[in-house]
Length: 88
Image 1 (spheres, one colour):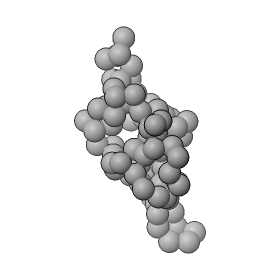
Image 2 (image 1 turned 180 degrees about the vertical axis):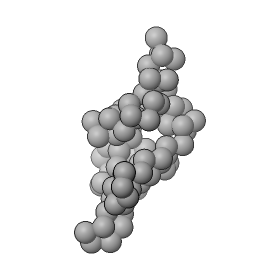
Image 3 (image 1 turned 135 degrees about the vertical axis):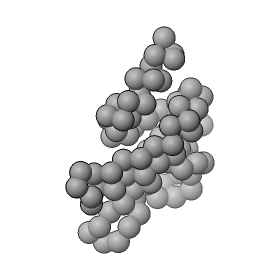
Image 4 (image 1 turned 30 degrees about the vertical axis):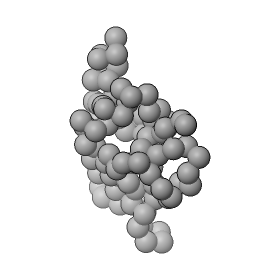
């Protein structure tokens, strides 16, 4: 079972809102997930990205793989640096 940290779309038509979730890669994009670790709202200016840092670091240390988009968000928020410095 490969676990990914990825975006799950929510919100109305033309007004997307995303949850950042930990999910088995076999599940649908907006389907079942293991845990919610943050949110992303591209409708705000600037776009609002929120992570629950402790949960995110915990899942990364357990081996969860972040998708490319989520990895960029983690780098901007500084969480990716904390993860890589712990791993080294």
